[in-house]
Amino acid sequence: MSHLIIAPILLPIFTALLIMLPPIHYSPMRRRWVSMVSTVILLILTVCLLLQTQAEGVSFYALGAWQPPFGIILVADIFSVSMVCLTSMLALGAICYGSAGEDEKGSFFHPLFQFQLMGINGAFLTGDLFNLFVFFEVLLIASYGLLVHAGGKNKTKAAVHYVVLNLAGSAVFLFSLGILYGTLGTLNIADMAVQVAKLPPENLMLVKSGGLLLLIVFALKAAILPLQFWLPATYSAASPPVAALFAVMTKIGIYALLRVYTTIFGEQAGPLAGMASDWLWPLGLATIMLGAIGVLASQDFRKLVANLVIISVGTLVTLVALQSSAATAAVLFYTIHSTLVCGALFLLADLIGAQRGKAGDRLVPGRRMAQPALLGTMFVVAAVAVAGLPPMSGFVGKLMILQAAGSPLQQVLLWSVVLLSSLMVLIGLSRAGSILFWRVSGNEAGPERVLPLQAFALGWLLLAAPLMVVFAGPLTELSFAAAEQMRDIQSSIAIILGDAATVGEQP
Amino acid sequence: MESLLAGCIGFLTACGVFLLLRGRTFPVVVGLTMLAYAVNLFLFSSGRLTLQGAAVLGTTDNYADPLPQALVLTAIVIGFAMTAYLVILAIRARADLGNDHVDGKLPGNENSRKESR
Image 1: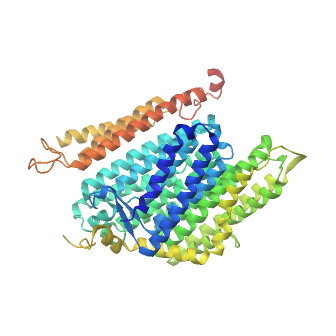
Image 2 (image 1 turned 60 degrees about the vertical axis):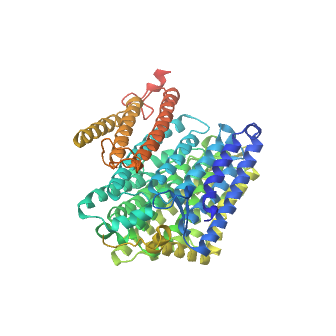
Image 3 (image 1 turned 90 degrees about the vertical axis):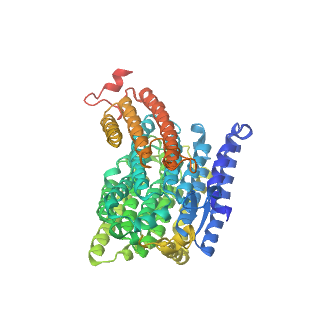
């Protein structure tokens, strides 16, 4: 049993505790360095774990050596480990940016950040549905703390909405867990897949209602159409490094949707197979359109970026609804691309706002920027990537999405909605860019400059856009391998529960 | 016993949802607490109701399912911590925004923030 699987959870929690101890806690520079170095180590560990998983296939870690299905397990497959890798890359950028001064505007930035990393990594790695709930709560309570970091009316107001909504979501989560445990008798995801396949008919509707309650919870976390109204206000109110990290939070909802509706209610589930697709497909398409309208309607740049997050969520949900290998592979590739680029855009919005004086990031004519060339280049790279234009990563991602559509009807709907939304994003971004960079009044630039650490953080995240095109071959192979592995439920169940358990066996 | 418990859970949930939809932060906090009670009872009942059964194997023929009890314990602790945080946040919002409405301003009274200062 390899202990590497639990490292992405243990490292952040011990770092958070270390940062709160006196010799480190009293010096801002020490806090920053410990936090940054720990995140670099986390990145190295997760890359090692990814290489190991690629070489050896699915592996699991039984906590306390309690064997599944009785104990809690962590499962490492290529998809989940890739998501953990993505989180640590994003976190490194966000922490470097925060260490340039944002972290001193409130207390306990770094410990909360590390706790949130622990929750995110745990949510990706866990193989137990109740443990997923626990890690959701860990990352949520850290995010509640981070959201009000640096204080202010807007943040408090957004935080009240965010906390109340998520507490209601947690209650629904527990209701659905209660229903599923009461009917299936297990909460281990692999074991649930086995139990669903041999479900007696009288429990069918109960399990279905439990499964669809889960859909509501994950839709709330991922911000899918009727439950997305909290997102723009929350993300645009949060301080920039926090908003950048939040770019991965919606993706956890998507990942959970994919995991639950591919593994538990996947092809082997008989009458329950694909029960979420009927809901996710129209809602995903509608979410894309709503996000695109939001991009056109946004009055300031951060709201615009928050709406870009909604578009990416809609796209991913539509792909989850397709339930095919190509779609799952596209989910992974597009998630990596959109998370890093949206995170970078949140940081960029803050830099632009800081140099424009009173106008901030509102889309109105403002003061001349001190470094228009640097910020402009970054803006163009990010905008081209997020709109899905050729030289950057968004193009490859969009291509994979368009290829994932199976039947002609799906092609017509998906192609028209995705391409139309790309056009609207392009219009929105060119409007925002021309107002921010060209409509300037006066020749005096303010004293604010981009700090080296901020430039490094932004460059680190934006580097993904060209690099994902250069290494598109290996990355696509990785995505397809992850998709095949995730959809090959039989063999992962055989690894986790032993060869005795087979899916579809009649009792 | 089953119908009594189901009625309790239903009543608590209904009260919780009703209070959750109110406009002030205090009823919302109380509503979430009621919803948490309902959830805890519900989770507890997911292991089926057993009278006079210890959650230990081997000591009795009539044993209770221990897992829901562990789940409820976790859910209680988490719900309690979250509610405590929400109470503090609501007090902070009352101080920052000048009123205790969840949207930060009283409906139909645009100048409420200025008056309350």
